[in-house]
Length: 365
Image (tube, rainbow, N blue to C red):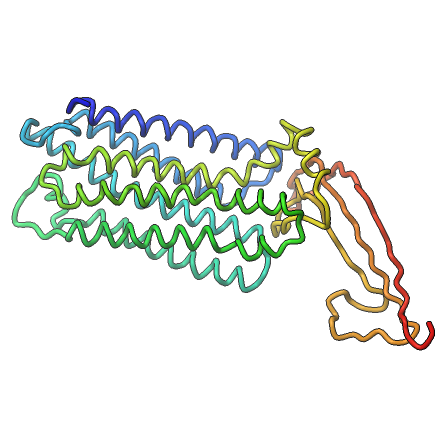
């Protein structure tokens, strides 16, 4: 590949992944606005992440326009300054986008999984992510003092150590990715789902592992640019991986939200997949959100007491009633908000309902 094509390849790859992420985001927004008809705060965050990704691609384009991919000695000093300024902007929007994506995913978790300990863990990790994002964005803005010395090379100037800062940030970023991916796995594994359903659900949440792989692949290019004295020539690989990482993160955060759309577009496939499953299955219903697609809802009621009263003892003649209900919500027909109260009529189909009466055994009964 020639030197000129070196930078253009980075821009082309960035444009492709940005366009793909944008299309997936549009599907997510369509699902939220026209199928579920309920917009959450994490949607605004992922929109912000998409804007950052577009800004990152634009910054890469500006860098290519002013010589990225060429040796710095072959570029006019004014163009070098413009290219490095765009590089500085790309660092800011890259770090902001990663933090916003992680925050959006954690907010999704909080809306899906109700266990108290899990929610506390989510809030703690969210606080760490927000604090870490503020640090990386501020450190990128004020990488050099005065700020413009980053792209002008004006002296005297004080700048952070590139190698130490960028690798510290990359390490924290990779670790946080793994933590966020693994966080819901124990809950998902504990759900009473058919094995195929459980694997599919784990796969949906684990798809974020692609982001971890991209972050790891990016490390090699980070070594080169962090120690480089020829930034315009050595930056294309790092720019490429940074854009891919950001857009893959957006895609992964959107995929779990597309199930209602897939159910509407491919009802026969989705329904057949549900009918083939067995057992009492389902996922947690998001708090403060209308249900649009639940695989099934299981409930157990005990006569004369709560099902959660594990300490109650069954004596002679006691009767215990177990009620198991499986319900699948096919689609939401009407969801509207009126005076702050959401009202909905849903088309449902009850798959089966069984009631078992178990009489206590003891002393001849």
